[in-house]
Image 1 (cartoon, helix red, strand yellow):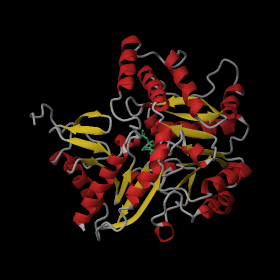
Image 2 (cartoon, protein in one colour; image 1 turned 120 degrees about the vertical axis):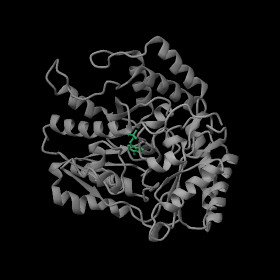
Image 3 (cartoon, protein in one colour; image 1 turned 60 degrees about the horizontal axis):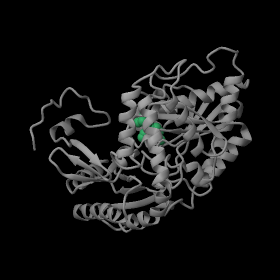
Length: 440
Ligand SMILES: Cc1ncc(COP(=O)(O)O)c(C=O)c1O
């Protein structure tokens, strides 16, 4: 391995145990299709699409070329009071993929920004329609909505709230839907738990009064807290309760968007249409940061048309809301999804993926396996008094054996690129199985 020509110390790594990593770094230097290459030349099978984002596979030539061409033609243009063709084209393409009626797109750069944007749109919409008193936002326990103050407040991840608290004052939370006693080893949507949506109507609405609630935000499948698949009927009930009481329903599809569940959005797979969808990650297959919010036309029209003429209707946006490189990457990525029929491919591969992973039942410390589309969670019994240690050790061993998995505590979360082959799925499951059996 060539010596590193850079120091490790100055970079403060995100969501990483810095001291542990810097003592034994794992450095990736290149990638192609389903594999990473490490600095010492080892090929690593990507079982996680990077961080749930590289849905089209790595360094796909058409995406690389589109970014290259755009960088040469227009590197940056101011995005306030100015436009460039790529942002309009990308917005139209995304709107075309979205559920019927959701046809306007606001761009941001990260999932966290998309979530903050969606919460602000909810407040702006309620205000514009004369319901400005509706400013309570409802999230869910074990929801992950990024790391902005909005996202951590409506989210339900103790580790991200521990140091920073709940800075958005007017928030509350639905209960999560994870229950191993009832639902362990469910394939696809669990049978038990639809009634947990009723908490919105039986507890939260009486507590806050519907007239004060602006919106409810959930991930259709919670990803980062361990792939929590919604029980059958749960999302439908949430939709019905929101409709009954005039609350907006936001699906955070930062992970589930762009084919992960076998259709463009999980909203379509589940047949439940929210009022807004947040997206990021897969929109450019991770190649350039891009994110955003897709909104129902009436939301756009209410905010925009009820503002005084010639005023900025929605005082929000980022320097890079629709950066030319990002929108070029998005156009190329969406074209590739279409040409290679990758959403259909995810749908077709899902039964094989399910079968391969559920074959790990009984492998060492496995206490649950759950899956939906091309995402799966494998929950491990924690080592006594050492939560997360078994998960991390499993991650390290798999990496040594040439397979990238992701762990969240003691839960393995899998979300391979949608180009994965059946043989590679078997390899992924086989490696995890051998590591778990050896550890047991
Ligand atoms: C559902 C969801 N929302 C928001 C985010 C935050 O995205 P980002 O890390 O791009 O800010 C994530 C990240 O994984 C996510 O899974």
